[in-house]
Length: 49
Image (cartoon, rainbow, N blue to C red; front, side):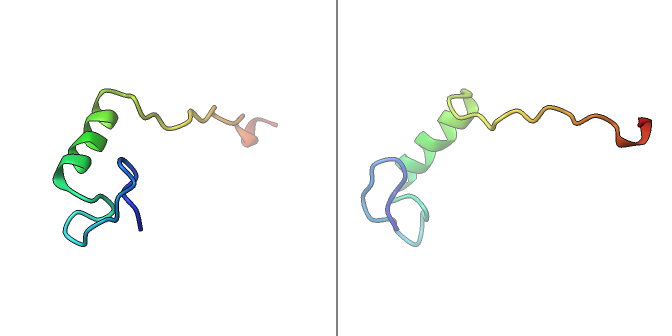
C-alpha cells in the first residue's frame, strides 16, 4: 500500500500513510474543507404519495 499523500510505501505505525507528517497533512485538508463528501439531496417522502 502506498501513502495517499506522497505515494511512498506506507508504514504499519501510520497506515495508510508513510509518516506522521503525511497523516497531519491529510487531517489538515479535511479540517480546511479541501476534501469534501458529496452532498446527498434528500429524497422525497415516500409516505406522502
